[in-house]
Length: 319
Image (tube, rainbow, N blue to C red):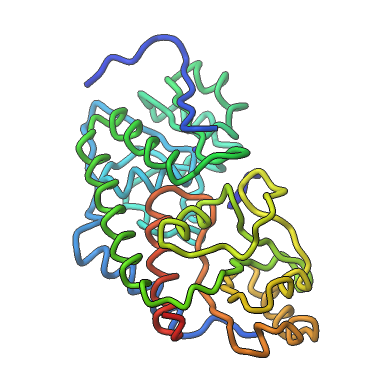
């Protein structure tokens, strides 16, 4: 399964739209994450979505689902709704959407019975295309690939998805909204001490993933004027690298920002380890903790991550 791991008459040929090739969570971090959701709802940013009844869209990908919801477009079906709400959750899944099964292995009988006009996937799901095309058009997007900027790809994909949903203005509005938010965060960080940041997540108590070039998080940090302490290229397709804990001591003056893992036990075991406790950043208290943020999303994920990171750095005295 990929990381948890991309009215006009459409052409009849199949197309692929390639958009470029030691502590538990703090109460403050949890409140910060939840307050972002509350603020989004209260501001109307994620209002209850609507879609014209002649556009019957199914999303088989979480990054696409969050983009639709943020544009106030309601698909008739989406993949892994429970997993999405637990792992992504921003914007939350609107009521009344049919769960069509796994992103990598949807319930094809159920999917066909919904009679969609179009099914949206990312390029890593291309193995599904031929069978789905027996009963529906398929459009594919590439947000993550080796090299390139997933944030820029997500922007272009947003415009493509909005056009497909016959809501082109909503795509433009969402991009403008995200751009304004990120600029606001960048201004708030103008007093940041400019220490580079290791952005990590636990796999096991001794092994981590560090987000680097090619990741959505790295691109957001660049737009906020923040430097990534990990400069080596990624060894994973999705813009991250497996490392051992000791690798974080390479730049002892950097700050470590910890993203909560779906497996909280891995993080807790690591925080208790002597290796973790020996890191210079841990001894100096240059550690920050973020709630779970799904690392492979689109523009809504970029905005949420940027807001959480900015609040953390400002409140922790890094800015």
